[in-house]
Length: 128
Image (cartoon, rainbow, N blue to C red; front, top):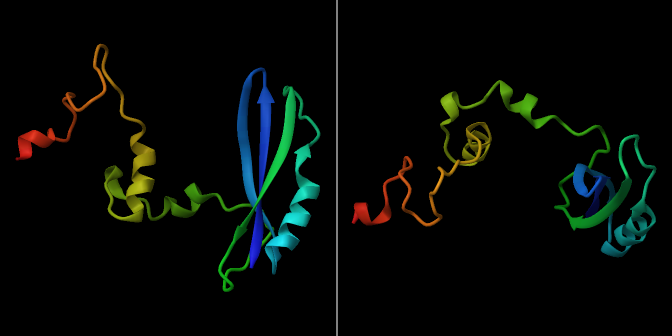
């Protein structure tokens, strides 16, 4: 079983943004998916305040027990809100969600890359 992922890109000035991605359709063979995908690739109408807009499409294999619906994508943040980990601490798959609320680590001025920082994690050599 195959499905396609529609990728909508919008350009404003020189900045290109992947605005949305969603699944579309079920196909028994890769060739059927690619044939349908070719028709969907390319320029799309340009929204106001943008200089260009286009759509790319990828075909991907999915397990036979997976159903692809063409409904509006689920807002994952709302779906997980009721079960969010406390204070950004989590294990396993929840760790990836917890990293979203922590945000990117900031480097101080004059700090170089490499492991000489004084973050929360002790340096590797200190654990030996």
